[in-house]
Image 1 (cartoon, rainbow, N blue to C red):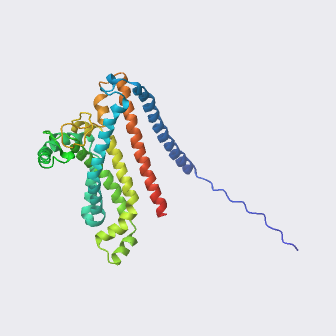
Image 2 (cartoon, one colour):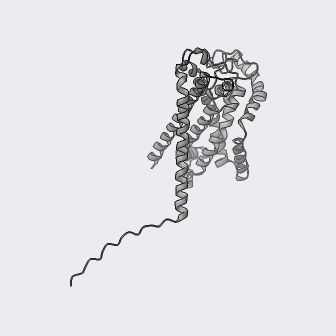
Image 3 (tube, rainbow, N blue to C red):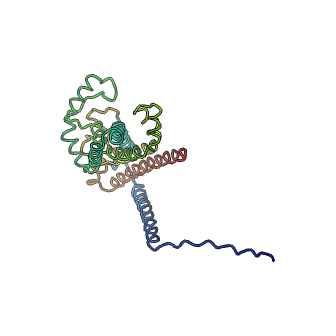
Length: 313
């Protein structure tokens, strides 16, 4: 007798439940809505901003062309955001380390809640605080910097008597982005494998050496993501900067003078109510520049994080 081969068994098709199909469709639709909204914003900014490229000096605040109009605003936006990150990043990393590795649990938990609550404070409150309290308190400090460190271009002076400078605006922005960076880095630090930390300590590493050798390498991509998210918040902040900064639309590295560069977001907020005609298009076109810069920053951050994840894998 010859044995007959059994027919191959067909793979059973996994039957999806109705709830799974509904959830998958809802999440897919949410992703499409985000893409459509992003495309709609980009199209609107592009269509409404194109006429500004042919506008004259009367519609561009005296600038010869749109590039000359938007470049000082872009410079002030990047300067304020970079200063804010230089101030906020070390503080955020320190606070995140205290909460995740140093403070006792009964103190770390409420401290984490307090830091998270900083993100819930409206930006107009930060602006009022910077305008009425922080600026006047920093004015004597600026005067001292101008008298003793005036040979450095950053503190050349003359010092502002009101404290409404680009440095004050950067400090306010640093406090605003602090909870974002702290919250993300704190979670990343807490997710570091315990075995890695215990192995470093077992080999004789101190607490700091354990953090430097085990925690920081694991959390590097998360730290980059947190900083980039903070940069995005700092680039787009409007009301706090508009209220604190006494802007004149120039390009200068002097951080304590009464002559300060403005930012794109603050210029739009202050100029839009009274703008007409091509001036509105100029403001929208400057918003398009800010949109592109923010998108490029987030794209670069995603690229860095993805490269790091592939390397770790």
